[in-house]
Image (cartoon, rainbow, N blue to C red):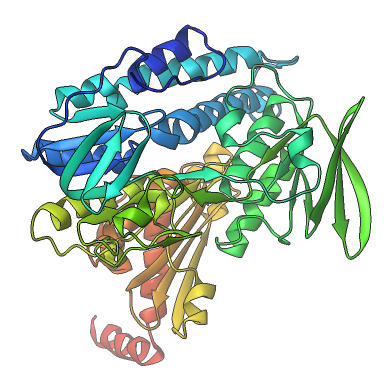
Amino acid sequence: MTTPVTIEPMDQHNQRLVDQVHPPTWQNPTPRDRYHLAVLGAGTGGLVSAAGAAGLGARVALVERHLMGGDCLNVGCVPSKALIAAARAWDVARRAAADFGGPTVAGAGDFGAVMDRMRRLRAGLSPVDGAARFAGLGVDVFLGGGRFTSPETLEVDGRTIRFRRAVVATGARAVAPPIPGLAEAGYLTNETLFSLTELPRRLLVIGGGPIGCEMAQTFARFGSEVTLVDQATRILGRDDADAAAIVADALRARGVRFDLGVSVAGVARDATGLRVTVRRDGAERVIEADRILVAAGRAPNVDGIGLEVAGVTFDRTGVRVDDRLRTSNPRIFSVGDVSSRLQFTHHADFQARQVIANALFFGRGRASRLIVPWVTYTTPELAHIGLTAAAAREQGRRVDEIVVPFPDVDRAVLDGETDGLLKVVLAEGSDRILGVTIVGSHAGEMIGEAVVAMTNGLGLGAIGRAMHPYPTQAEAYRKAADQWRRAKLTPLARRVLGGWFRVFR
């Protein structure tokens, strides 16, 4: 029998979810003699590895101790974007009168209905990641705690799984900083936030990364009094500073208060709620809250899965892999958050595709060749790929930077969404794209054009030669290409053209 799994609240939607991704009555199969591929972990990286290998005819075993679908389906991408969409709709409704002469909207919304919708939609998507579907694909699905028992065997539910190759795809988990009193007072992470049924009146968010910013803005739009604290002096530290500043202004406009450059010295609970003490330059003050969301880091799931027995090297940063995603045991590979610095669903997906070729065939795919975009789903969104200008210069590269502010983009003006920009970082003197940053309401969709260009070695000039429909916000790319072309018009070129037009009569 499988390990019981609890998820809250256990309403009809969550029951439907569990019935798909960890069916209570699931019976693990009798293992085959030897599997071509055994996959430990059924998040995105594990699911893509298992489905892809099985689709090619390999014998595949897939082991998951908790919920198939991993963080993305259960406590990450899917539920968070459902909440973000609802919060955006609330905000647009409230602002319709002032911004567009629309109807006046007042009063509180129904947070319980928002969460019910999220659970319903999540359950509706769950069959794609479910045990029954993967069994139908020819994968032997084992639910329960799996661990390596030798360099070429796994054990789950008392059964031994022998393999030729294996993939470690156990993901990562939220971790809380060692703040005195935090554990005793209680806190939320992304793993528990989506179990809420009542809106916190006062929410304190620890962490100014993507999760912290997305949820801070979302809950402020729902009506919570939100304060975001971080040791850093700005939010979204790995993104372009100008782009992050636009997002910060947007969060402030929606009511998020920032307390940056501070450390959290302690947390205490009293009759009125939580008292969070923050410290800057030796001075302390107290912030009052009803709930705390910790969005300040993740730890790889490497404990208790027998990596030592399997001869797989790991440390606190995760499983160590080479550029072909092989571990120190050449039979075992690793993908996703357990072994990657870039912890994104789409990155785990593409790593898994590489592993299928590298582990089961004679693939030579290198993880370092993957060009990885990311998006922070605030309003406006912040999307990025490649290098920022600052990062490129730190590497000693000489670059040109082209900036198109969204007040120069007609569609952004018409939509009332001028708080944004497109930045393109080019190798100096050429149109070779080193990086792109976009801030805008559709940035996550717009970044795809840059991804295609960089993946296929296309320069900014090639993007500019493609006709973009008018009016769209993506027309910003054409404006960037026009800027680049104008910069190529040197004084010598101008003199030559001047001579031509003097004789061209």
